[in-house]
Image (cartoon, rainbow, N blue to C red; front, side, top):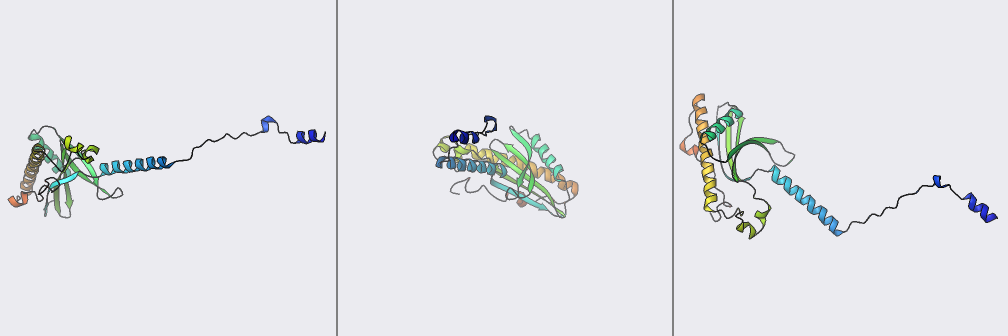
Length: 215
């Protein structure tokens, strides 16, 4: 009888009982951590490609002392001059590149694209003078360009360019450079400043060794 009373005193009605669901979590294994690490690496690699400008192959720059000018107006003159040459497959846009890392300020550029090459033009008022530069870049060919043998078969090896690829870069650069010089000449005449000398008109940095292997 005592056992029955003791059991009855310990009885809890069904509606007062709390049932905790059983958790069947599987502990992480080595491959889970590897997958996460690879995912983080690919994400950071993708971001680094987005924020950086293309690899520079050639450049030109000049500082005009005592010249005050709107950068946007010169950009528009450059675009108009390039369009007048009716070059096929050339597109225009404006981009901003970080000064250094992702936490630094960004600078605006006029971006001129042609096939896998582009030229980024910078115009900026600097004190009482005006500065202009351009950079010829080669767009990142993608992941396949980093795989030996395959990148050569697909023509994506930046270290080995065909004659056509070299000619394409050179003619694009020459046409855009001439257009920029013509726009600058028009501004110089309007502002009453001297025209650039033949030496000042020449690009100051030749195609880099990685573009012409063995040079």
